[in-house]
Amino acid sequence: MKYPPSLVSLIRELSRLPGIGPKSAQRLAFHLFEQPREDIERLAGALLAAKRDLHTCPVCFNITDAERCDVCSDPSRDQNLICVVEEPGDVIAIERSGEYRGLYHVLHGVLSPMNGVGPEKLHIKPLLPRVQEGQEIILATGTTVEGDATALYLQRLLEPLGAVVSRIAYGLPVGGALEYADEVTLGRALTGRQRVSK
Amino acid sequence: MKYPPSLVSLIRELSRLPGIGPKSAQRLAFHLFEQPREDIERLAGALLAAKRDLHTCPVCFNITDAERCDVCSDPSRDQNLICVVEEPGDVIAIERSGEYRGLYHVLHGVLSPMNGVGPEKLHIKPLLPRVQEGQEIILATGTTVEGDATALYLQRLLEPLGAVVSRIAYGLPVGGALEYADEVTLGRALTGRQRVSK
Image 1 (cartoon, rainbow over the protein chains, first blue to last red):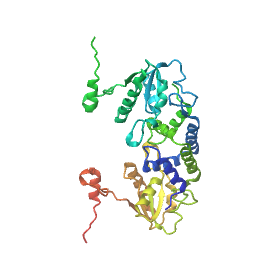
Image 2: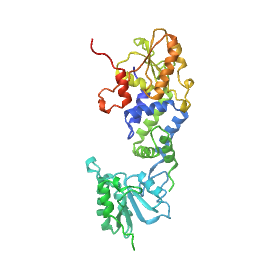
Image 3: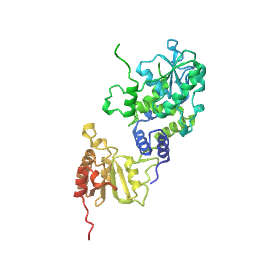
C-alpha cells in the first residue's frame, strides 16, 4: 500500500516541529484530516499571518507586530531597569508574574559552545548602547549551566559600563517541600537565605 | 503588555491540536517565528493540500487521494479477509508489520456510550454488505474496554451473516519480560497459550 503524497508530506512537515516525533505527527495528521475545512484554513491562515505580521523589536528583540514592542513604547515602564532573558516566551512568563515594570532585552538564545553558539550569535551587541551608568541590569537567563555561563559573560561585559548587575534568585519553588528539592537547589537556597528578623 | 493579535491567534489555533496544551502551543509558536518564511509556507501548504486532496475510500473508509484506496483497488489482496480497525493510523501500523495481505474496514472510532458514540456514529453499516459467507473478519480494534466492547458488538452482528469472526491475539508484546507484564495481560497470555509440541 502506498500512502497518498499529500498525507506523507503533511506528516513530514508536522514532524519537523520541536517535540513532535514521526508517531505524533502521524496522529496529528489523522486528527487534522477529521477536522472541518474551516478549521484547517484557520490554522494555515494563522501560520501565514503570524509570519507576515510579526518581527523582533529593534530595541529589545521581543516579538511585536508594531514598529517597537509594547514594552519599549510604554513610557510608564521603569527605564532604569533592563531584564535580560533568553527567549520571547520568557518575557511573557515574567509579565504574567506581575512583579516587573521595567524594560527587557531578549538574547534569542544562550551561550552554548558545544552547539556552536558564541556571543556573536546572540543579540548581545545591541544591549551595550542601551546600558547607562547606575541602571540595573537583571540577568534572568535560565538556571542551567548555559544560562549561568551566559549570565557570567554578560556580568563581565556590563560591569565596566557602570551598570548595577543582578541575577534572579535561586531557591526553592513556591509550594516546594524540602525533601523533594534536589541538593544543588537546596544548597543555593541556603546560601541565598534572607534575614527576616529586624 | 499586550501580545500581538497574530501571535495570540496562532497560539490559540495550535493549542486546539490534540496533546498540545497552551504552554506547548506557545513554545511551538515561538519556534515557528524563528523559522524561515519558506518553511512556514510549506507547512501551511501541506495542511491545505492534505485537506483538499484527501478523503475516505467509499468502500473501506481508509484515507486516500484516489477514487478508491490502494488496498481496495489492488486485486492481488486477499478478498476473503477483512480486518476491522478503529482508525486510519491502524491500517498503516498493520501494513508496516508486513503480516497481512487482506482488505480493511476503518470504523473511524470506537463504541463509547460515555462519550455519546453509538454504532450509528461509526462506519459499521457499510461493513455489512461487504461481508460474504465463509469470509474471515478479523476484529482488530484496540484491547481497551471500548475496543473489546466494539469487537463484541461486531461479532454479534457479523456471525449471523455466516462470516468467520476472529479477534487479534492478546498476549505479551515481543521482547517483553514476564515480571514487567501486568496481571491482566499475563492472564490472557496464559489463556491464549498455543501448543508447540507435535
